Length: 294
Ligand code: MN
Image (cartoon, rainbow, N blue to C red; front, top):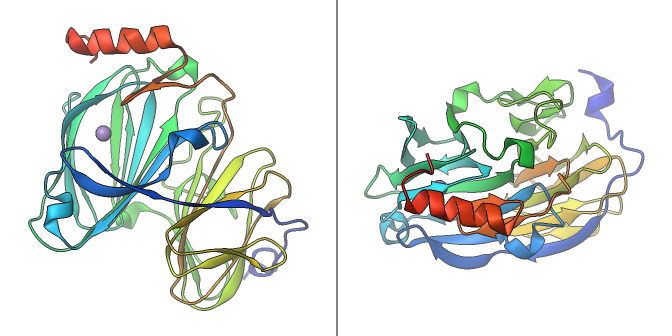
């Protein structure tokens, strides 16, 4: 094993700026979920616009699903932990999202899609992240990609820690989605880290990239001092100083690590449309109402 990655190696781990507890809400046709990244954090966590967490054993919480609805100007990344959801969209795309799999949808100039549960009982759990597109790409062609769980690279940088690489490149390994910086300036890193025993893990993060963690099992400590606790179902926003993330967690903890280069562009949102200006939003609404979104 490479000693550079198996030992703590960061010179100055980023500190914890603040913890955020998600807000319970309902969306779609009444799906119960927790909105972790809310609109007031869009500037601070640029290029990320939203993070929703859903998790329930009760079909009343998820059964209605997300019937047909539009998007323009950004990407949605859905990560299923448990359960099955069927996606259909106006490009003709269709896929089944299930345990450990990811759907990466680029709405671009416009997509109309539905996300409906394909189960009447059992657990449904997962996340949906909204990732902004730079202004130059907001009107690109829509596309989507289903990534099966088996196609997500997994590494064990230290004994007792499994890292699933959904997107980006870290510790000399490419994630399932790894796009060139020239065409995708946000350079998103999206990791799911499973602690099978109590230990430390160092993850380098590029300077200036906004970054946060979300704890969905157990709890974790962040930073050099080991006293900065992020509790279960909390998001920990990392300071932008330092050379990476030092995580310390107990056996059974699971942590999403998400980072990206900010776009530093104006953000204008109206529901499922995210553009740079109010005028572009009005155009999106008009295009949708006149059947010209897609
Ligand atoms: Mn949607």
